[in-house]
Amino acid sequence: MMPATPLPPLLQGRRVRLRPFTARDITDTYVGWLNDAEVVRYSNQRFVQHTRASCERYLASFDGTAHLFVSLRVAKPDASERGEIPVGTLTAYRSLPHGTADVGILLGERAVWGQGIGLEAWQLLTDWLLATPGLRKVTAGTLACNRAMLAVAERSGMAREGLRRAQELVDGVPTDIVYFARFAPAAVATASSRRETLEAAHDA
Image (cartoon, rainbow, N blue to C red; front, side):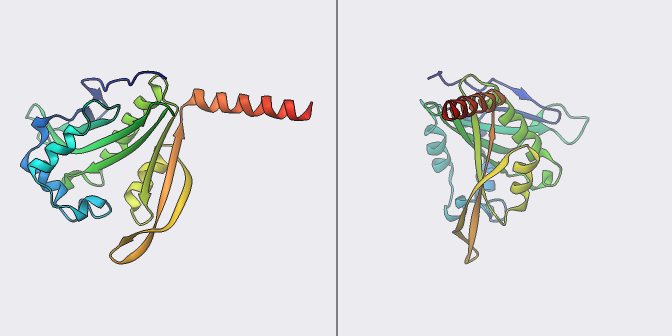
């Protein structure tokens, strides 16, 4: 089993920047995202009233684990100003024995919705994960009514892998959860080679 690769201090995309989430990122704005009914409409976070203390406990839960909590940031909208602003977060729950990572995203800043920021951040993180030693597969799940997340998963190259029918209630309506996956190229090649070996042995 390979050791967990730490997230670099910065992953730079065309418009987005990803870096480890720290205690300094627990601001009134961040807590506000989690308590915004529209932001967490399709997340189970909608059932929780968040505070700075609850956010600190959540951040502490990553200590000593292989999991990643990531701050999603973009350049300030005013080109005359230097620096960046936080607009969301991502998580990656890694299982090192199995070489998998389950990824999630929260795009908290409504002003950037509909601009492809979530897709770019998702692609950046999942590409990096699949390039790390020992990581062979990334997964994700989303409610079938969450069209934005369905689009992110599909457009980032993930394939639909399964479905849990009527798994959760959204506004009282039983709703499916759709599961997606994407494999590292090396993992796909290895799986194909093993299938060919098994088929040859069966035919012999």
